[in-house]
Length: 334
Image (tube, rainbow, N blue to C red; front, top):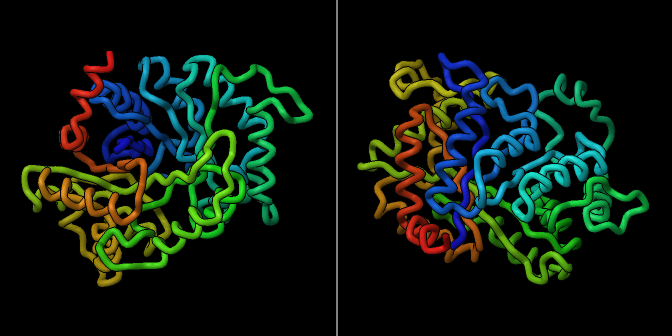
C-alpha cells in the first residue's frame, strides 16, 4: 500500500496563520523521515481556518527542506486559473524537485459567492478541455512551448467527485476520491459503483496505462479509541460550523469544543464527520484500513488528518506509518 499525507495548512486558535504554513513544512520533513510516499497540499481561498491558498508556493518551501518525498497538490482548483499559468508554476517547481512533483487538479468553484467573485469565476468552465490543455503544455505537444520545460514527468491526478470520475476515465488519469463519499462507515453506497464505472470506462494514457484510485480521509491513531475520537473533534466541529454558520474556523482545543453549546444540527454534522474517518487504536485502524482497501481496490491511502494538538498529530502520523512498516522500507531504500 502506498501511504501519503495531505496537509491543508489548518490554522489553530491562538497561533499566527504563518504557523500553519511552517507547521506543514515541518510535517513534510517528518513524513519523509517516516517513509511516506507523497506529501500533498491543497488550495483554499478566503477560508479563515486554512492558510493553504498557494499550493505551488508551499510545495516550493517543502522542496527546499526535503530530498526524496514526492510533492503533490490535492489539489489546484483549475477553474480559478489559466492552464498555462498552472503548467508554468509546476514546471518551475519541478526544477527544484526533479521527478518528485505531482499535480492534482480539482474543479471546486470556491467557498462563498464573494470568493468566487474575487476569483473572477464566471460561467461553467470546461474542466475536461482545461485538463487536456494543461497536459499538452506539460508534455510539449501544445501550440505554446512551456518554459521552463518540466524537469522530469509531472503526473496529473484528478480530485474526483461526480462527473470528475468520468473526465478522468476519458483522459486516462488517476483519481483521488474522498473516503466519506465511499461509505467508509460501512454501508454500501453509490461511490463504489462509480469507481467500478471509472475502471470499466477507463481509456489508457501514456501516463497511466491502467486506472488508479487513491482514497483520501482522516486517519488518526491514539492509545485508546476514546482518545482518537477526541482528536477528531476539532476538525469535526469546524465542519459543523461551516455547515451551520457559514464559516470554517481555526482548529480549537478539544476541551474548548466540548464546552460549546451544540445545536442538534451541529451534533449531527459532528457525528457525520467522525463517522467518515478512521480513528482508534493501532489495531483498530489497521483492521479498518484493510477493509477499506479491500472494498475499494485503492492503490494509495492519503491520510488527510488534522487536529489541534500538533504533538498528538505527529504521534498519529508515526503510528500510521508503523502500521505498514514505512520506516523500515524508507531506511532500506537509502
